[in-house]
Image (cartoon, rainbow, N blue to C red; front, side):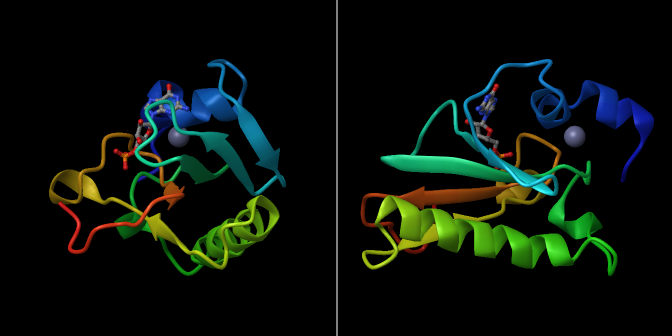
Length: 120
Ligand code: 5GP
Ligand code: ZN
């Protein structure tokens, strides 16, 4: 869903627009990257499309490329920050059972410790 109400109320839209401060690592005009305010690993950043899309279940043919771009961004950050070899995890939570709390699509990039499996 992309309702106007959702956009105006959306935390990540506000961070995108500079209305809420965040440590922005990069921004290519399609995706921007911020540090997570409550890190779950030594490296925990959020890769966020500019476009307001509420959940990964709302992606469509026109927006699906953003997913690949997000993974390429994660791989670039992993190379640049030196943890590509040790490894990392990219996660997108969806709706209640997925543990989503901010309803603007984003990909968590976690690194710097061994990740458990299965996730909690
Ligand atoms: P979700 O739970 O939707 O998968 O992920 C939302 C993430 O956004 C959480 O990891 C949470 O810590 C992070 N977050 C929530 N509010 C803020 C904020 O104001 N600034 C930043 N940088 N991250 C936030
Ligand atoms: Zn938004």
